Length: 453
Image 1 (cartoon, one colour):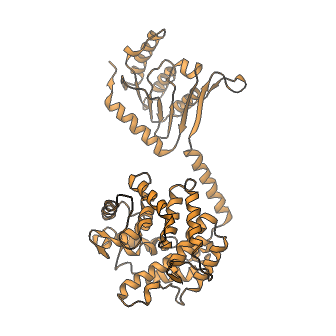
Image 2 (cartoon, helix red, strand yellow):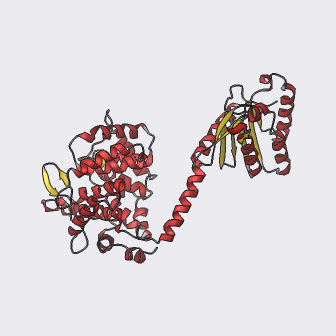
Image 3 (cartoon, helix red, strand yellow):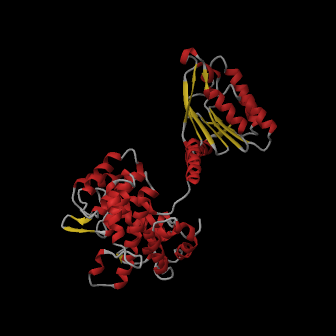
């Protein structure tokens, strides 16, 4: 969608605000403190944002309002910078490292005013499982009962929902209740209990948080949106509340960019941004459902006796399907093998370019009635895999990986008793991250194993 056509579907207020931002931000002058404004503009004009992103390669882009080693604009705008794709930049990574180093023992981040939720939201985006994130989440939740800046609560709700919407639904609802306790009759939200006037940034963030939890049609969202529209200047901008104080005009100019970007984000959250057709929505929903189907795990099992005494051989069937679909590579971990080997041999003969790697227990570990058969099977597999058969005496995992696209993790060895006659279960996945981690696990064992002699 072009810049013009995207704007045409927005409300009048959004159109005027976006046009003011695009006309007033100076892409050639400063740097990281524009992040929020450019995050908004990216939704309408990607080409305009490219120059801003190009400037991020230069160190001066990252230095503004610094105190000590921490760039305060990276603290406040870290999430927006990351969403713009700048989180892999070396300067950004250094600032993020500095911020994490400043986390208190109880998990709190504070550099300039109340910035904890800003840093938390950035960490949720970039490293949701890190100890820094976990400590910061506990700190935020524990602090929910204290009075403070209401914008901090609103950003905290956004962070919690982006981390795990279902898990933190109760905490998010409590936080929304606290926000609503400090809503003025005019529809706006206050900055602090001691300041009664409605506040543009806090109202903007409250709209984003409440619409995330209760939807854009919630009455409090609509009332706050109406108040926010009334605060828009004739030129399309919004004035930051501190503009009335004497001081650095350059600083206030940047704050007005932030206030305008805040307001636009709120209006977009309330449904006043660019519209798309119902057909496009339905198509995106279809693609999303397909993506979910590809990434969700599927439970499979072997059950000699199941519903109405039916014999289930899901694991056996899935393994054969996976092997037959292989195009470039098969990786197998199984302590013991005495079936499926014919499929592997046939695949190797029919597709000489197919890489097959197999790790199993040493021959000396094979005992019982099928000892001789199993040892012959390993000899055949050594030939079929062109020597890519290794043994490891402490192997216990059972995994099959095909083409870096799918993985089967189960309790079943590739033996008749475990694939046919016993109760075994497993998970089949196509999630890229899970398959990659399974592949890394296999490769590590491969390095530690010995080639079968």
